[in-house]
Length: 221
Length: 221
DNA sequence: AAACACTTTACGGTTATCCGTAATATAAAG
DNA sequence: CTTTATATTACGGATAACCGTAAAGTGTTT
Image 1 (cartoon, rainbow over the protein chains, first blue to last red):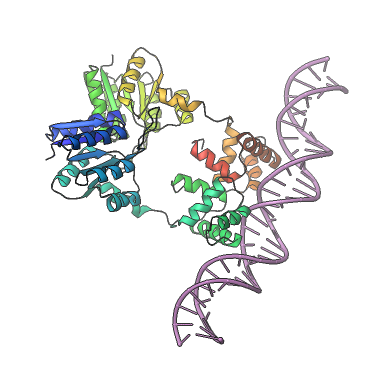
Image 2: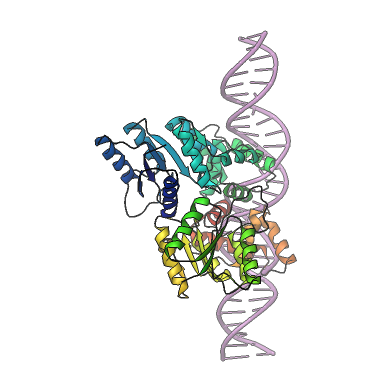
């Protein structure tokens, strides 16, 4: 089991209970930091003293406050950590429920586990720590469930782009100009209309207003 | 201080640490439930046995799972509780950072405190419990920060009504008919247009799409 | 290079929205 | 009962969105 663990998590309550979970698992030395910069500094100091950490448990989103940070969030922290100490095991513990984002964390940042903050997260975190300590990867079961019940329409970057433009107040007829300036193809007004139409037909939506409401509700934009 | 406290919170980790906070404050009897239905049932049982709770700490959003619930979330739970036991003190402990929603909880549901899950939430919760125990209302300081940058437009029921109709896909020109059928005045198309225009001008918004996006973001609808 | 399928764009008629102005209705005050 | 102020509705021209169809472009195959 892990001996020296660092928790990076801004929410005090979560921080407290993760500590408690570690206690239950018999971790001797555990540190916690509420800011990413502090967390990285501690990891660096431990390296210098040749007493490195062997596990990092980190959140993804850290709220900004008057303490201006170099490292804004968990993703950047992980990136920095991977340069400093590639062997460090990393467990991400976050509310984030987007499978694409989680996949990216595994594939591009080499994290060892992803635990979603959810109903059984304490138990889930214990399982993750177990798995990682035997060099296995782990991801919350509750993540997988979600994507099956998804949108009947598969929104592409292009779709999301034009809907965002609508949300910014740009009239439909000005969208082609914007698309051309930014070298996005297709850029014709007809193409924009056609695409919006396809989305609306598929989702049984009749107006742009309803489409925006739908996308906001589903957190597509 | 409170003697009998119920925690309704689906996230295990948060649940654990709130319990710990209560321990620190010397609460003797504390119960915790992961589902709203269970929480209400327990309150009811306590009433029947004439040993009612004197404080409820509840989250707002509860994730759905295979355990189908009558009461979907914190808001509905509070509503039900207010009918059952109007004197019960209620502290809402949630991630929600929207001032309109919080105001509504205070004004329409008579909650006693709102603590936002954020950096210093453990300390914040302690303060809230303190305040509520002396019959004072409390809301997180971190919420207040947002208030200043808030709506410059005061949305009336009428405004929200027509925007909701737009969100449902109804074309603007059909709104007068709907308003007449439901005896909502004014009902003229000009009045609808005028009102939408007033909102948009005030908020510096140029299209209905942008307005819908704005309202969704601010959780006005 | 020609034929083909497919994507993108252009065009035009219809309908809806936008927006200013004028008429009417409603309410309060004299 | 007027007068006055305000709120509501009606109207109409300009603009934008909607929608079907035709033209132009793109890439692949032969």
